Length: 179
Image (cartoon, rainbow, N blue to C red; front, side, top):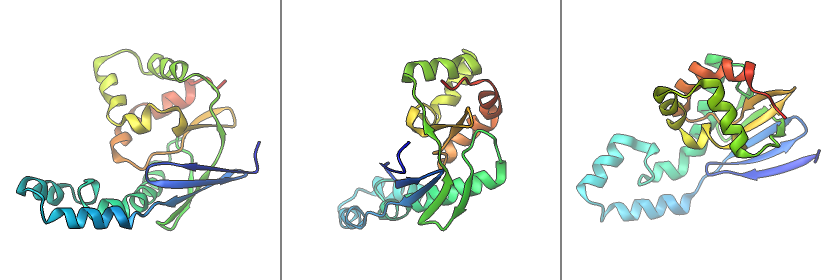
């Protein structure tokens, strides 16, 4: 096992040291400025979309400044509220930085991973909708780790994944076989 590992996601840069992961929020002032200057030419529909969705809309300058910070805060908030066993614990969050449990990357084909999740939750139209609610978080192998022989999710800063995790997290935690 490497002593220090680094990863780069869309909203955060992660440095893993031993059993701790330090998630640093990415802040992109250049994209924020680009969006701000583009807004002057945006259609009224685009301005309405920005007003409705705020920082979660990629047309908004706030999106490029705060999305990593919000992902960090939301992970901490959700972990403290739910304490689901499938969540890699978030120990501390300063907004700009999250400190979370790190583990071993899963060493299995993505197809095997998805087939096992599907077998656990069952093949039902509603369950398929659940897992597709946030495909980035729920369906990507790199968002999971193995810790003490159990599956843990490490990227749960999006509220779109929470309903699925509340409904299926315990069952997946209990039944998923980590290779």
